[in-house]
Image (cartoon, rainbow, N blue to C red; front, side, top):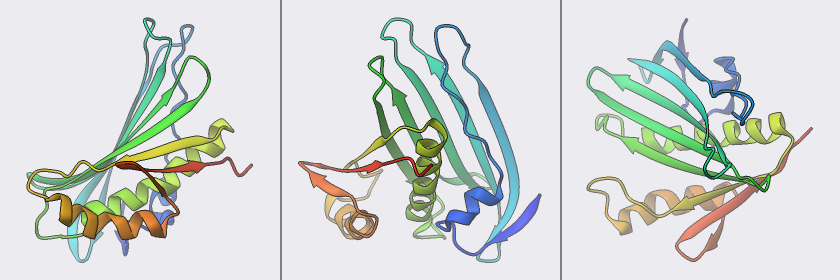
Length: 177
């Protein structure tokens, strides 16, 4: 499958890939893995877009975890966002995201991938019919200063309805079923 993406952040980008989010692993069911790869063009630059998922269960804590990584690769350079959802023993959910952009020729790509993760988090809340609490921590990548992180990410957090809580921002994604 090869297609042009106008905006990585477009909610339709992930939907057009037709990816089903894995179910949580439990004591009774083993974890799963899934990997899909697509050739895409972004701003007239050919890239490989991959979606990798893994579901695991910890017998020690009783928690389940799903890690879903959306990556764009240009040869040896890459940009990705990783979504980690934990289902705790008590039935509550927490979500964290991690963003990296090493494709220096494409500034803003990491933020675009992070925005692409938001409809995926909503899709997860809908699929599991449970609210998901997403926490964004201020952890700049590599040479990004704290001030630059604020300049780049605070407008996005405000735009998408996140509220500050100390050094983190949170938003609850409620199921829309």
